[in-house]
Length: 298
Ligand code: PHE
Ligand code: FE
Image (cartoon, rainbow, N blue to C red; front, side, top):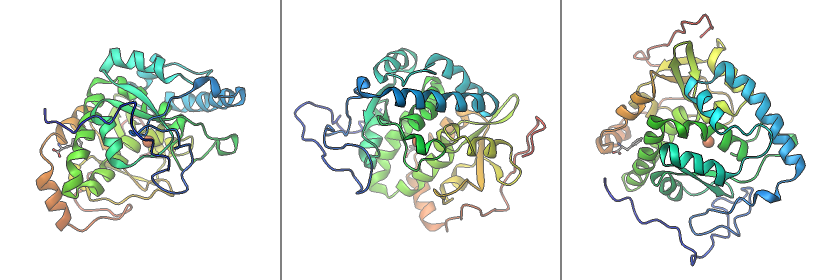
């Protein structure tokens, strides 16, 4: 394995103090050099625990219908329907299962630090929860998105392996100018990906799994296109952060993702720089549309 840079953790390091982008929510003043913060679980209010419970209940009901089986199996293992979960307790279970652990964050962090965490099998989880007014929608990732959406699949061995490889790939991509392409890959898989299951197409992306409106839309609405996953096609495709996706990409399984992203991306980036990008709603003749076999309209 190649070395991916030294770990930035350490007690004597200066705090970042400021958010990487002005206007970000969350308290960065107490963050360590690697941007982690203690969760301070005792600080959550009863109202926040109640909000968590409501978010969890609604989303679990939707997940039962629209999430991939790997997610549903893992959700049982971190079952925390009533109280905001403790990152240290979830980490203990995860470490035993796949060697991953969770670290607390004040919010979004710079890419390099994010990749460093993933490359070391540390999944960063935002420690603050949205407000009741943001029950249906929040633009920035919060604790509910990060924990409910991302953490369960870290129990899946193949997915877990891929996400670490992605982190290492990110560090490698920085000097190669590969970041825009990797960001698209992440968006269309880790955040908004679909995967085939014995019962039809299901969601595995955290942006979908933590959204009450886009989750059913992505899986069964007739409007969006669903295209069989193709690595280069995905890395060419721009995305929109302000509306539901007009195109989703469908994996056969997680092994396909691990396999297709294993080669050295250096020549891929060179090719991508020559190719025009595709718009989020653009179709190309090579697209293989996925037709569901469970009667759902897609
Ligand atoms: N294999 C890629 C490379 O060598 C890294 C990577 C792994 C990128 C997994 C994305 C996902 O650059
Ligand atoms: Fe996310």
